Image (cartoon, rainbow, N blue to C red; front, side, top):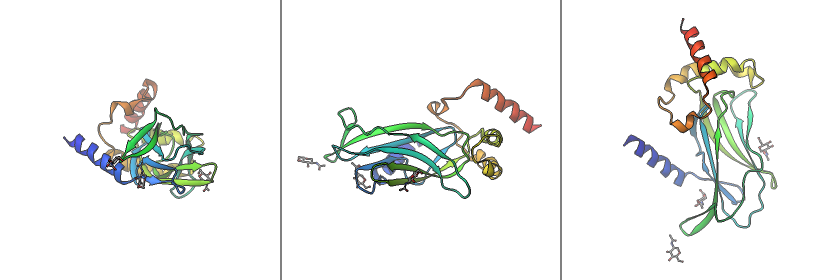
Length: 199
Ligand SMILES: *[C@@H]1O[C@H](CO)[C@@H](O)[C@H](O)[C@H]1NC(C)=O
Ligand SMILES: *[C@@H]1O[C@H](CO)[C@@H](O)[C@H](O)[C@H]1NC(C)=O
Ligand SMILES: *[C@@H]1O[C@H](CO)[C@@H](O)[C@H](O)[C@H]1NC(C)=O
């Protein structure tokens, strides 16, 4: 029941909150503005091409928008912009061509505010959707691992603090599909380190 309401609410949001590109050639259906996602889990990216034929070369990025030096991660280079029968959809007599990318948010980027940026390479315009990425359950561990990595080492200390604060509010049950990429070695490492931290 609760699940159905959540699903319904997100459907309503999808219907209401599409972000359109400046030249009107595509809509971003997902993520919605202000959406909240979790490190290591899926970031659904869905865009609707509105014109056919279309001349669009598009890259999609996840760009840190908080203070300080931020990470930029490529979601798609030369994203799929084919307009054909397999992507064709119809709503209120309007045809559009929908593509989606199921992007796994790296655990190596700090939690915080981000923009999902759809870069139109041809016209040099960006369509930007602001989102928030929260720490995953393993973030205390991954944040400490991150200190030795090249990504955003300067913000590791602050994200460690926020990771600890927000990890308790992370959804208790993640869907099975979001658990892809979960492997035994990191799991064992997390358990050992969690045990070590608890002592
Ligand atoms: C694209 O987005 C605009 C602005 O939100 C909306 O008016 C239009 O109906 C959307 N088009 C489709 C095909 O969903
Ligand atoms: C779609 O087009 C048909 C035929 O032109 C028309 O009868 C119908 O009312 C239209 N539906 C919508 C939702 O605009
Ligand atoms: C669009 O975003 C990309 C990725 O962050 C950036 O490299 C590019 O300079 C931006 N283009 C414009 C016109 O702002």
